[in-house]
Length: 184
Image 1 (cartoon, rainbow, N blue to C red):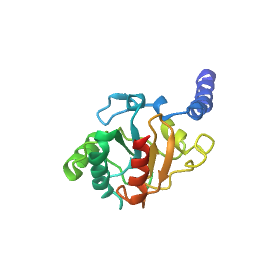
Image 2 (cartoon, rainbow, N blue to C red):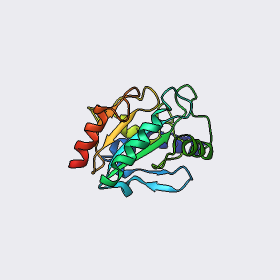
Image 3 (tube, helix red, strand yellow):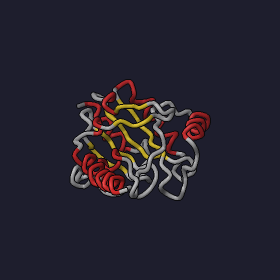
Image 4 (cartoon, rainbow, N blue to C red):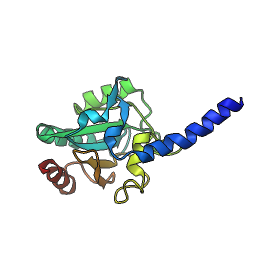
């Protein structure tokens, strides 16, 4: 019993510390929507837009704009990565297969989607521990407040910008930042 307690305490201390020690999103591997482990390092050399998504949110319509943004810029090196999360208002209650079917049938999503994770709270995924860490990312860190928060990542895996939920994917603010990142 003591061993299990020690193991749990060690994991609780070391796992967050390991996430904060990361210097790039390329250091993380997450499961795709179908369960396949996907190293974000496979996106090295590409610009990424990382978004926590939900199927029953007032911002769910943003899937349309996200898909159009991806379609417009993917050949120039943009990867859009959707991370379903049920943290806010229980607005992503479905299974990974239900989420995938919904995104494809309702919005024609073709960009990479990942398995449902937590983006806030005690069980926050290590990727989101890194993205929201104010020491690692002083300009863009801070807790996620709602679904459809967007992080723009440069070709080296560094966080360039953060856009809150209300910022539309095809807004001048987002498209200008994406275009600038793609030119580098």
